[in-house]
Image (tube, rainbow, N blue to C red; front, side, top):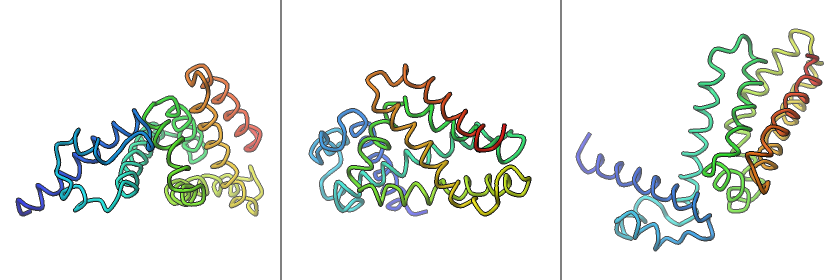
Length: 195
């Protein structure tokens, strides 16, 4: 790889790292491009070479946070006994991450407002809905749910996990809200899947 490309990738990664910290600490509205420039030590021209606007920088930050969430959930679920166990473990991992200040601010508070609810949901569906649908297809194949309901139930499970995570993230004390949210999510899946 040529040195200019390597430098460009390093600069982009550095900008995302700095912006992630700033967006998590001050929120989208409280973080200016000038602050990102000052904290990163990168020139305005270099920043705009990589990101056309504050919105595109935020989207890159959001993608990074989303990738981290997906990786953590996948790591926790890697030894699951079956797709339904993986669904349960992955959902609980997502809900537990709602107490993480970076996830709270960037993914659960700012992203729906900055991107708009519809775009936020589209991104979430692209990254998560397929795995939920696959687990519920397994539930349909094994007689736990009506196979004709797999798609609708996948949307319901995704919405439930997201709403529980948002409830926790927006609570006055997210750590205190976590046990009730996690317990309710587990009971919801138990009732849906007949456990």
